[in-house]
Amino acid sequence: MTTNLAAENFLIPNGTFFVCLVIFFVVFAVIGIFVVPPIKKAMEEREAMVAKTAEDNKAAAASFESADSEYRAALKDARGEATGLRDAARAKGNEELVAARHQATAEADAARAASAEALAAQGADAASSARGDLDNLATTLAGRILGSDLKGQSASSRPDAKVNN
Image (tube, rainbow, N blue to C red; front, side, top):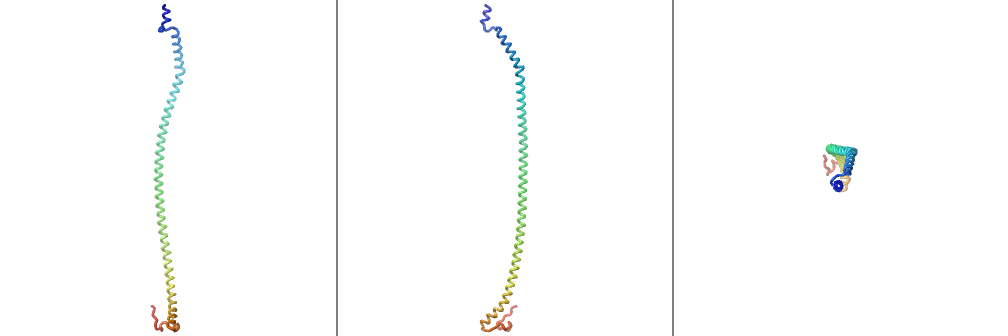
């Protein structure tokens, strides 16, 4: 009966249990020796790669920030230089404009003075010519009005002659 009790009682281990237990430990040892180390090594390599990538990203971000700040500084300097060049060009243009205005004013004044002198000379010539013609015309007109020929008389012998000094 004792054997029968052992066969009927499921709490008492039999030989199958021990064989399964030995197979489990053998499979566990094989997995622990041959499977786990390569997977563990691959996981460690992946973690190292991820850590290196994170460090590279941080370095790239720092490099980008540095390059960006250098770019902004260079851009600010270039804008300042461009503003200086533009202001210098405007000042030079204004100076040239003032010089051109002065030169044009001087040329206009010279032309105006030359025109005034020419007109004064022409006016003086016209006045002297008119004075010369005026005596002849006055004598002719006076002769017509008086009905006599006054051309032969001298200017001092005429009764209505005036002295022009």
